Image 1 (cartoon, rainbow over the protein chains, first blue to last red):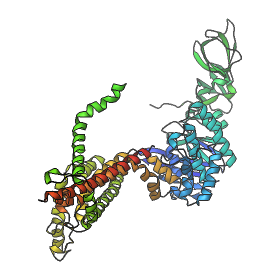
Image 2 (cartoon, rainbow over the protein chains, first blue to last red):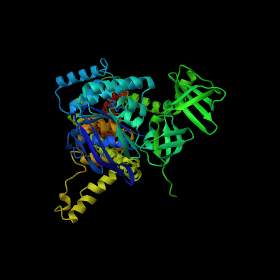
Image 3 (cartoon, rainbow over the protein chains, first blue to last red):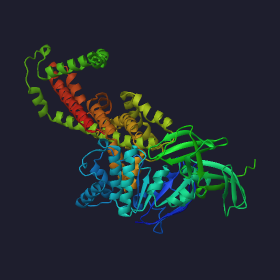
Length: 345
Length: 285
């Protein structure tokens, strides 16, 4: 498996800049997610790595060998497309064998590899079916087998799970991750789903507006986002509390909290709902439950005080009702402070 | 429910009845006469002797082969050219202009006009030989190889090509523009060269356009009379021209020969329809 290094990659279509100054590395056998909102240039970047789109500037290295000038058919970076793109006029077997046929692998060896691959993706017995006879998950697995059959140096997955229904998506994620680890396949996964990126990746590169904002492990990206932009993109519900740092203390409507090694100035604190704790309150409590959203494993509350609203994710051992008086405590050690951008207009 | 099913047939009935009657009555009459039942000429009773007779005639066999040759070559070339043009068209930024001039015009121009066009371009006193002579590329105007009335049927083939290629382009283009370009990319990505990707992925997907346009053009070229009559060689003649010669013979007793030739053409046409429906039901995807 190859190690991938991308250096200073840029691409524009006409006047429209798609990506610019892209740098990242994927260690051999690891899975890196390119995470970003739709329209961030993720698919273009993946196609550039596959050789289907030529970059304007920059270089890509597979094991330190530059590959931008290598045509796609010789590059060995195989893409699994979002809509699978199985060849509709070929059977499952012919689809999986396609890359091997193109490489001139003799027939007996070819059918051995095809059988192996179909076994790997649990699609034995479907050899002679046509793509239109398969379900989404089955097509997905055939697409995966077709890509793996050619023993790619790098596997590229373009939103591979987004067309699957939620339950199937979960099992396909697990399946793919498992397979990737077992085969130690260097993989780049494009996704707009932050949970998917967190669960599947060794490392995540966050791509927003055509440039990479942060590269790190899932924990790093989740707990220590490099910017408010990145933080906004990870996680569904968040609390923003404005305040000011002076002499290493952050003061905000929730109280004063230590903020060592933080320069003085105006800040926005981002507090994740799971770091807001609520407990049974009394008549004197400031906070009231405004609404309750029961999500099974956890319960989302919106709690209000005269000047503030917070979102809170609590466990389901005790369930509060709308209008209940509660006490709220915030674990500020997990809060993230971002300097407020000054407006010069 | 039942009336719903009948509805389309009922609505098409006026056309279908006229068409069906014309074709059915025509074929029946031809069949009867080809079997030698033609009371007007004093021929009665049925037999296969006219079929046997024409099958023994070298003229007929030569015409059959020539018809197949003209129809096959012209439709293969038209389809190949059509595929090529359709690919160009799909990648062209000015599709509208191209499609208007490139294929609409030849499709609406009738075959007889196409013959005149080809004649005025390629006959020994035509525009092309004169142009080449003026440019000093041929010694004399008559040095231009004869492309019309020629034994190889080049004039006929060119006329069918001029008419047929745009039709094939149109058919192929309609399917081609709906083929996901990602499939081509997927093939490249899996190690296919551009040519291999085209031949193993795009071309098979174009089958639903290629087969019918080939069969349609073949059937037309095989059965049409005016083009080879006007621009074809005097020998060999195509089947329709042969049938016509028998038909216009002052000797009414020649008529069964003409009809036997016609029935052979009808048989070939039905065979093509059979191949067509067979191929179309196979392409399920």
